[in-house]
Length: 396
Image (cartoon, rainbow, N blue to C red; front, side):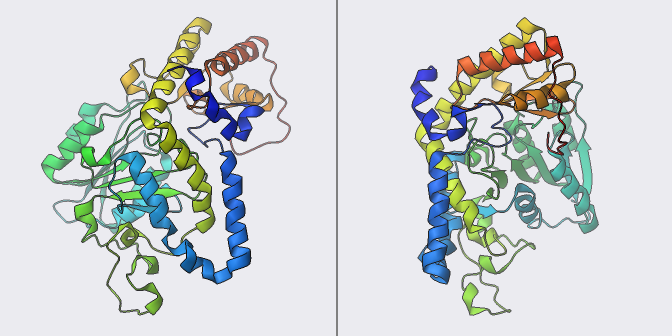
């Protein structure tokens, strides 16, 4: 498969006509159809008013969840929608009750900081946090994770793909160990869903979280929670709300009859505009296929690493193709300034300490764009011709 096989999709993403867009691990490019879908949302609100809830809106979380389910290997009716992954993870965590003999929550130091903040806060609810340290190369050693999981472990929560280095963690081994000791797994798929093949059913995880913001090209406000079907039948998350009820419009405060599908795991009123924004990206990912996306991604990341060696740039990215997802980070001199300058020149990347400039091509990128962005980095590093950056931004 070459760039030409996927070139027809480039016209579906307007930003590609004016930038070299290489940061899909942070925010996927917006499909052209998304603007029309959001216009449909606005028109529906304007013309149907409150009737839009009964027309489509109330069941949209299930509609979007089922589209995601087909991408991550989940059965229909098992994926609920949430505002962000932190919220989705909290719903999952609130379904587990720590006990005196089983209260340990195991995670890794390379998980996204928002998760670590959440896990620390759960110590007030009786969890005992154990953070497995990172290795010197910023990976997570499988053996250390396995050693941390024992019969005192209530929850094992970890990232399938590490956000800084794009390292693919050995999920099979970790989930297997958790199963052996009877611990619940919450797998964070934010950096894997849509860029590498993923089958949460085959993995056997109790819960998986993720979002459409990045590789699924669905924009913010579209996080998801997969709940294994057998657990979904009797899960009792303490973080719940009226949307989860079988008869929400009865407004019965004593109602404890919940829905039997994934909306059982939801809480407050859903964010309908976000769902309209997610539709086009999910449809495109389905049409292209994650296997094809993975093949193209591996070609592009291999080229990035080859050019990194040619230019003499250090990278924390794994050199094992089966351990690298979609991002190559380059630890070049003055990396924050290089990142800012690239963006000013319409090469869209970002910077993350301590790994440097992150470059994340998707299926819609080409080998020629990889060559261009690497040549531009080499030029900036050589000349130190940095953008003045007179307008300071918190976002890097």
